[in-house]
Image: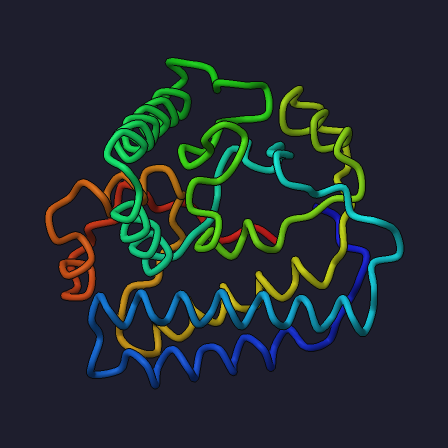
Length: 240
């Protein structure tokens, strides 16, 4: 997504979030604290985005609306381990059939991505893969969707369709920069804080990370104990 803003608060915001993460987890990390940390980070990011829109409104209307799910298609969705744990916990609040369908999709997408990486298969769509959490055009766990998802927006849904569905690499998705920068800064702050608290902070891909968090016994506790339980979901350094 191309930003239409160049804010100067990224560094202080990242540091502030990192400090809170350390204070929350250092010496007393638990699954409950991970869940609470994510909920607090999501609420903070949403609030700051709303404040920025009030102070510096988008120069044109955003095309994003309920039922528009082009942003739920892509090659990767970057999440942290706490976010994966939070998503898995959210699944426990859904009905059994929905959870089963989501996990089947998560496992399928994870395996397909491995095959694509090995040159043995092609993506589901020219633009990538459909998020396993997408159900009937809507996110099944929207209130706890990852930070990357919260920060994504666009002024033109047709451009999103061209890029995400049709795989048109020349389709430049332009959006309101503050949302993206706030989400990216909070995400970076969480990773920085995890590292400072002595925890692993790899960048994870949502589909395999969700599958691991929801299917591996005591995945969250094992990650907190230092086991590289999310190794199969790790991806390269975060995108810009």
